Image 1: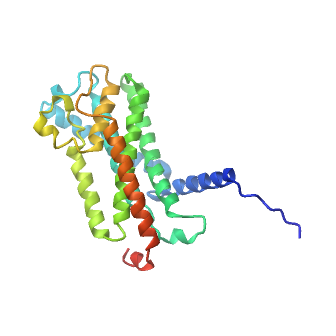
Image 2 (image 1 turned 90 degrees about the vertical axis):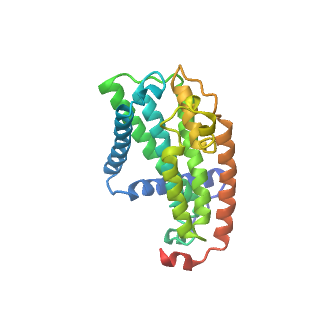
Length: 273
């Protein structure tokens, strides 16, 4: 008798969607570890291990002369940050909950929210890790300066976005061929250890070697990021338009594949998980 009716307009629906994405993102962040601080520290440790390993390798093999003239630590971090962000985004989106997940039984939840929350949770962890490491280096070691900080951050986000697009394609393939999708994701991540070009400078690579890296959107993002981060480096063999265009194409393919998969979802797909 005494009830009130709320009009569900577009603004209210958008707020509800944002709230669901936020709650699901927090859940994804805390899924790896119940203590968010421990999860952040583990990701920081992984980044520091990468930095230490590549610093030692460049020093022992005498490859520091091949790096960009300037801050060597910033040269390493610019490649490692983007590599980890891209790889983590691929794994997070590919591992997001599908249409047969138990979470999909709750009415407001859907696969779009699960994908967005997985992608945003990986971005949140990587941004926080990069900010903490750069702050520690800047305060405790020596000042860190970026030639063009805003475009450098844009390339960081482009590496994340391209990882989301690649992960969407693997996610659409996973319900049909789960073993193949997992193997392809692992092979892609391992191949990016070299193919990302985080250890090389594109301007110094011969053309016959450059052909093995030019297909990778992460390679273009890293090379362009270094062009914005260093005043004395101007990338000639990479572009911004290629990873942007490829990411949009892969994202559309992944969305169409995920939509088709969702319409033909079977509860038996989750039986072997």
